[in-house]
Amino acid sequence: MHEWFVVACALASNDTINIVMKQFRATVRASGVVVTTVVHADNVNFAIKILQALFGVGNVISIPTET
Image 1 (cartoon, helix red, strand yellow):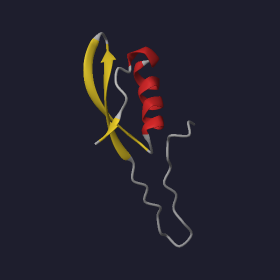
Image 2 (cartoon, one colour; image 1 turned 90 degrees about the vertical axis):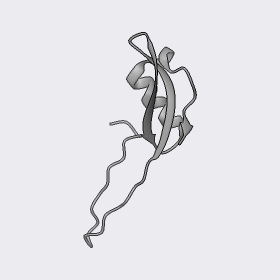
Image 3 (cartoon, helix red, strand yellow; image 1 turned 180 degrees about the horizontal axis):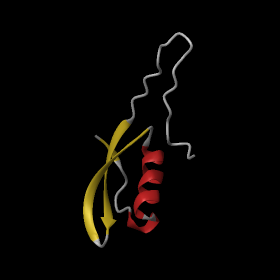
Image 4 (tube, helix red, strand yellow; image 1 turned 90 degrees about the horizontal axis):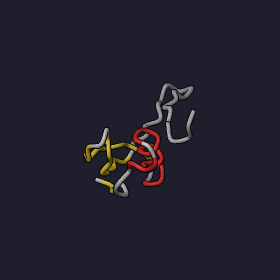
């Protein structure tokens, strides 16, 4: 499992960990078409890694910006 995936775990006292991911918008090339997409990640570096894994390293056109 990759480190950018976050798992919410239940604690012994039945409280839960609430993890809020940041939203990032980026321009990518998908099947030759340039589109804008959104990913959720902890920071811009993880957002880039997610986009590169989904669309390929050469297909991430812009650096993700937090929305």
